[in-house]
Length: 155
Image (cartoon, rainbow, N blue to C red):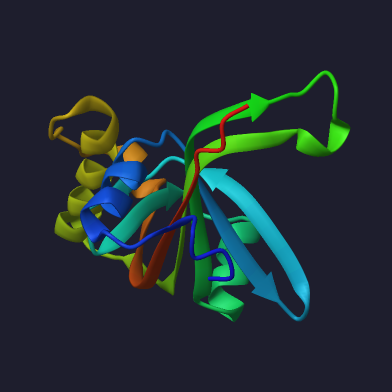
């Protein structure tokens, strides 16, 4: 990381930032074409979980290249300065991760992934079954790299 003064090295703090976020941005790339899409997610400290419909651009891109990037941010605040335009900045906490995405197949694996997602938002496990389960695909990104950054510049 170029700005080591902003780097977060404590893994517990990085995990807290991810757990405090509402949205994960999933970055995909195939043949020089990038694609970033926000997804709801779950996190267990080692992997990020998300779900999709049966078909779509994300699925096509993940099939062509399972290497992905995930991004999280929280506590974002614009810092302005009425006297100096070059002093405008942001306060923030962010996390970037890299890994490989795989589909969770079979009812038990899908339920595990869906419960990771819903536990992130609701704090509890749920019951599933029936047609909505058949219409949903569930994915896991096994994280290989996870880095954090924080800007606390005072305005």
